[in-house]
Image 1 (cartoon, rainbow, N blue to C red):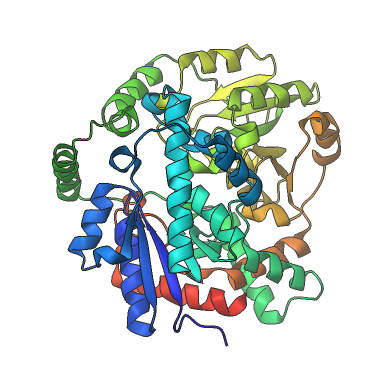
Image 2 (cartoon, rainbow, N blue to C red):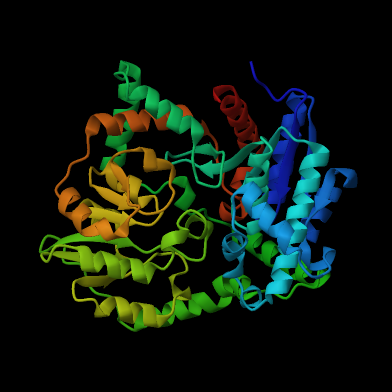
Length: 472
């Protein structure tokens, strides 16, 4: 039986609580097994945290680029060789991080390439020297973790990324940059070849009935309440770290706290949204996604321009259908007003407020469309057809169809708008989700008010890792 005993594990210690989460998981694993662990520290404060937590500096590889790199002339032959060897494109992986700040977007090519070369060489060295059996991280959100993921795969190192499952209070583990859940793929393939047992059927039907009676967002989108005192402590800690590490807060940091809430209030007063006409017209629903974020930058990168995607959908719909575009509730004010104006110019399209109830809109729609959002799977639970364009874990389920060729959208709408969800396959997919996910909260501490750091949850995360490894 495969276990973690005498294995080597590499952890990625980054922002948003990745360092605290990985360190807690590390300590729990070391209580159960004899293992050797090593960390890659994304920023200086992550390195300092690990040192304060008792990790030896010999077990930490710093990879923060602002202070550790000399911007010399990049070795183009080496970078080209890395593209061929590891299966990524330099400018593709850089796009994951570059759009997040204006400073990155305006960086000179030479500086960008020398920085990426430094990151690749550092990861190659740590993987070759330490020779880990596993690379564990939470949230694929920057080009650095993406680089390590590709290199680790090439070196036959097992990759484990914590992801929140599509079921409540459970998490999943992905093993690559394509958002695949290997155990889900395996379990669903098995269940499609046989009937569900009475127990499996009861569990799947119970979940489906509960969801349909009272729909709820998955844990990945759930909001967590935070006391005012804890918020104050976070702000003071942020200010202290900014001063200590001489970091000027970027717009991505200040925007959500100061600027976007003000802009949101102003946008709400502009009266730019249309009212839905539920029951009076047929429509398909396209919920906008928050950007920039990893779900679209990495998993939906070929259709990241939501405005262009909306235009293509609008042009492809039958004449008697409307396209409802619903704004995202989270930080919607970071979008330019011109985008809203362009959407409203489309003749068969209605722009809906972020405050409209998404579940009511899905329940009364003819179809739900998204790039990588979980609404495609949620629509299937409501027995509504859906299509998506990016890499999602639920793409293996036939009821949430992935579209690879957008030129086929008119034919797809013609075929799928009147289709029905196969309940037998839906129940089997739900059952396979229960079999391939594990109890626990796999979200970043910063996204769940540190709930994932609770000792009981850390124990569950390690339990899940054990079960995952045995199921491989």
